[in-house]
Length: 317
Image (cartoon, rainbow, N blue to C red; front, side):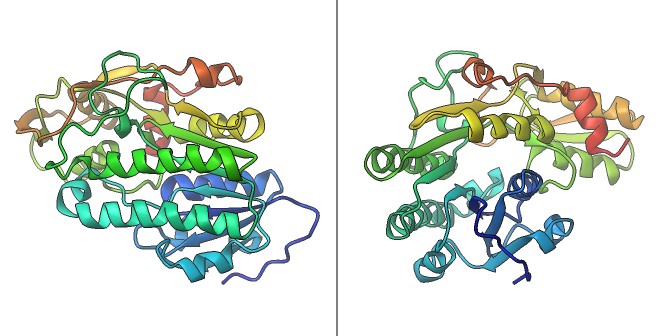
């Protein structure tokens, strides 16, 4: 635990998953806004190195979100919770669906019960674009029906866990919270993010590339949008300050790109010629997912980082 003096006249946030990529950046935002910040994380996928710049200004509590007693202790004297603790990364959806669901379901139950016990009245729940799976409408707004297309496909363990999180959040939120908001990030990227996502995977592949053969899953014609971490933080800050109770907000951009063109864009930036080698796409993948961001724009959000600029900052160029 880091030693830190917490003054009584400032709002206190508890951030679960606070040593992960998105969580650590949110904690940095909160510290910069002069909030008191506590982090609850077991560092299974996160790292204390991600919060080294703010470690003297926060309180770190090591713990598993499934440990109800430890979480209840962390929730004492807390005004608001940002719940991010989860198992992320597509490879884990397929290989560890029980763990994904266990952390998702027990986590949200413990968070809600802990908030009620400790009289925490603000809760911000991280969801995901995965709740849409293959949407009916592109770009996809927050009213799109949420789906679990096939309960036998382990890929949907992640999206199912997020849907359960949202359901519990909304219905408990009506009775027990003054402000409960759900946000659905769409492919957040930036420096020091985990290796489980497409952009860091591509970057790592380029670093170890020998020759020109560049493997990628699927045809490469799959379409996604990506949001740079600084844009994400601007959007999240607007949700904190202007977001409404029991609302759901997509956080993303409308800049879409084929995955093969993402590889070519990186190859151009890194000045490495490649020949794409396609591999079979895993069952359950979707061809296109682009968010409708009109709702978050009404709060004042406007993306500032086009993909090219964000990739260059991610690479330190």
